[in-house]
Every structure is written in structure tokens, then in C-alpha cells.
Image 1 (cartoon, rainbow, N blue to C red):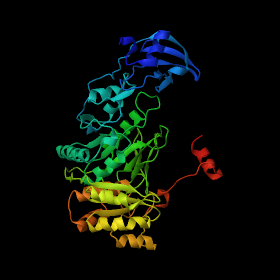
Image 2: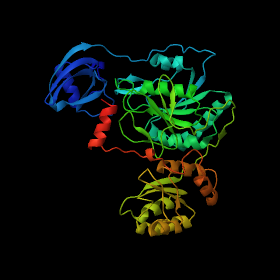
Image 3: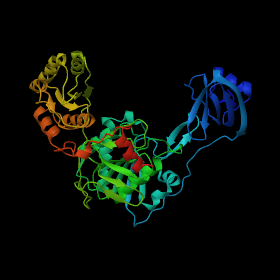
Image 4: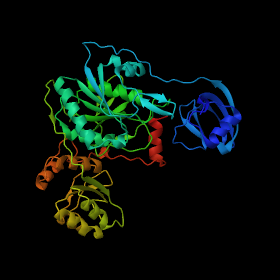
Length: 460
């Protein structure tokens, strides 16, 4: 196949030939669904034959159905070879030393025009070329420890990352940044909060909701905020650093065990649940929002426990759940189950016998609430008390994902279910709190007069 039509075949190839349009050309497309102007991108070998893909000036890709195209006209041509400029990262003995671990994601990227995807830039030189402000903050070294989408992060990655972080702390680094995809960042943050305890330096997870080729990308500013936090903040905890509001005003530092991704695409997707964030961060500095946090220390002492039992499941209860759901998990050798129950921590009665069979076989079962905010209170109704009698343990106000991670970590240490219970119900990193503050639960309902009046005052 000619390089003029890289990756195209079938109907799409015929349309390109008909209008004499090449891949990489800037093209005006007329269709029954509107007009478009952009660069014709190559197609990947597994893509369909019915669409021509354009990179628009906005940075977005759009696929145009060939059956709707009435005309295509080349208006320019320049084959793109995208590469983030690489410059030597300047260092200074007066600046703190920060280690950036890469796990994947698009915190700083270059564009792969073969697929329209973005490829992470990662070396210090690439990052300096992409975000030169980093050199004003710290001496940066990097290590690509994984290169996976965040849905592929799991116990193997958690334990390896925790051990690597511990080693860097012992070597004397002033702060740690972990570049991570946003989808499961809160799972990894919880895992690190349990596996790397009593850290003397900040451990900051950061990602981006919108990739670096998009004008609305949050990648550079998130990376600046996270690096500044690792280098300068006195909060020595595992944190997630992402946009506060969806605008470019400031970032928020969330505790690793109380944070959750709450929107699929907003830049301000991460939110502290059942509490308030640790601090605000911008280019100028930090504004603490609470005072009860672990402070930065000069020693190198850290407790690293990189273990995890993979045979742990999380079950989201739904009406009419059948007992075979629980039975099948147990039959497949799982040692622990976290249930996200309704209300104060409930499931339907048909599931009760399966729960009893599971606990009698030594499976650890913990109850959380799918409301996310609030505590499990299984002693209020008979249903809750019946479930506790069958061996379910209430997990206080742990978020379901956090309870899942903590149970895997606890079972990785011991087979003794009483010891597991002690580990699970002993707060380590604020995953369980004595109370939730009144402002730790705020869900404003848009459209009602008082909320619209409030929003008009803060965002005009």
C-alpha cells in the first residue's frame, strides 16, 4: 500500500483515491453531516474501513463516515514527525531532589499520528522540553517503572512501586512523584498509603484528564503542582494532586485513602470523600486546609510492607442479587470479599446463606456502603445484625475501593482472620475517621435558586 494512504483500505481508501487526498494533508471535507477541516491521519491496522480520521485544529480527532462524504479538497501538506524537544535538565545543589516514577498515562506526551494517540514523554530532557518550569522547582530524575494503562495496574505493580519508593527514600530523595493514569489512581494511592508508611517525604500521584495535544490539557499544570508539592510541601503523606476547580486556578492535594475519581472527563474529577482535602497548591505555594497531617522529616526512616493477596473481590450489591455470585467467588478460591451494600450496609436475604457458607470456609467478608459518604451501621436494623451474625464485618467509613485494597494488603500478611480484622479496623492513613465533617459531604444540586445564586458569585 502506498505511503499516500497509510493504513486505509476498503471504502475509506476508495474515497481518498477518488478525491486525490493523501494522508498527512490538511483537507477540507464536505459531508451530509457538516463541513470539517483537519489533517488526515493514518489508520491503525485494526481500524474499520468506513471512516476517514481528521485531526482538528482543536486537537481532537474526528472520524468522518465515508458514506456521508460529498467532497474532499487538499489545502496543504506537511508530514508530521512529532517529538517533544529534548534539552538537558539543569541541576543545582540548592534545589531539592525529586524522583518521578512513570507507570503510564499522558502527563506529558507527544502525538502518535499513526493512531492519533499520545505517547508519554518521560526522560528528564523530554519533560524539560515539554514543561520547562520544572527546572525552577527541583532537580528531577525519572524512572519508567511501568508503561501500562491504569486499568492494568494491580498487585504486582503496587508491590514493585512501593519497594522502589522505599529505596529512593532511603537514598535521600526529597520527594516522590508518581505519574499515573487517572482511572485507577485512587486504588494505587490507597495501596501506597498502606504499603509505604511513616514516609519522611511527600509521595504525590498525578495524572491528566486531557492529553497534552489538546488545548484544554491539564497535564502540564498538574505536573508542576505535583512536582512543587514533592519538592517543597511539608505534608509527608501519600497524596493525589489534580485540578481543584475545572479551571486553571489551583490544584488540590487529596489524601490517598479518602480520594475518588468522580467524573469521567472533567478536569476536576478527583474529590476527597467524607473529609476535606489536605491543601490547595498553585505556582506560588500552598494553602493548608487542615492541620492534622504527617509532617516532612529529615530522617530516612520508612516502613515498607509490599504484600498483596490477589484473591480478593469487590461486589457491588444490586436488587435481586443471587447467592451464586458469592458461591462462585468462594469456589474460585477467593480469600476475601468486600461488599458495597445499600443504605447502612445491607444485602437481600437470599444472599445470606451464601455469605454464611463463605465465612464458614474462612473467607473474610467486609461491608462498605455504596453511598460512598457515611458509615456502615449494621446494628440499626435486624438485617444488618443478621449479616454480622453470619460473619460480615462492618468496615466503618472506608470507601469500597480502599477497603478492597486494604483487605488484599491485610490478607497478604496473614491467614489469621482475627489478625486480619485487627489490621482492617485499625486506622493507618485516615481510611477510617472518627467522624465526617459537615463540609465533607457537599453535593450541590444545580438548577435550584440558592445554588445558582452561589455559583454566580464564584464563577462569573
